[in-house]
Length: 363
Ligand code: ADP
Ligand code: ZN
Image (tube, rainbow, N blue to C red):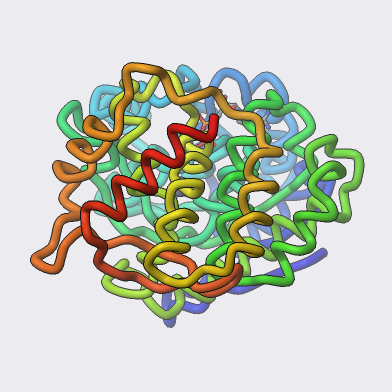
């Protein structure tokens, strides 16, 4: 069993990594968060594969386990789903000693975490992420929340789980598109923080995509969580260094928004955003062209839909500006000085525009 701690003082919590381990999660969950009642929040897709296993494992330690299923997809990360869950929890008269267990991808994790942070002013929270994106992204950092019709992820909190149980084998049932969705964030960690890891991804991408090699998948997930934990430990509430995790996200978010959040998966939009940020890094940060070529080569190996024709550089620039990334100094971007080394810098709008135009031309 592999482990890792996210060190946040009294909110420190462990991540446990173990392949084919869902049937054994109950004992460890009970050890870290003893409870008579566990409430598992999941979605209908994940439920089909994994709820029974998790329920049986929790019941085996003598606890009761209730399952709440949501409809899969981003629409469920809403106030109305949250309200339905609150109503259900209150109708069952569940008290503050329950533990909420999020079993699923990022949507389930964010929503269930939001419920845990607010139900009766906060109950204990355990995460069992099941998508690659959730393994490498939402398992570390404690961002929980829901969407508002006016802005995504705008209602929420920083609320750390008590334990995160990561079974990389759950990726075997993921649709292939969701593998690429997660790999975008995986490559991001190499680009901003770890040159050797980027090299590892160049040589192992095929194995990871085919999910043939559990060891390389485990190595990838563990490395991403360690890299993210290092950042979050220094800046839990995103006031400084944590912003480097937004590499490729300014333009990625603009693309998601311009396509109504229904065309790109988050990671796919971030791949395009990273391609644009690579060009900007060459122009403003002296990113060597040999590094830029390696980045483009790896990013183009990830499948992603093209940017639709009606999305133009003007519309992207507009969307970025309303995304409040504007400061007095100009638009702030995370840029690369080299693979594995990044910095945050204000850019002239012309450099942003040329990065976007290059991205639109390279599809
Ligand atoms: P994220 O990409 O942020 O993890 P979701 O929570 O929406 O977002 O998960 C992506 C999709 O993958 C959803 O349709 C979800 O039901 C599905 N999913 C998540 N984990 C698994 C899994 N292990 N097997 C099959 N489908 C899964
Ligand atoms: Zn992201």
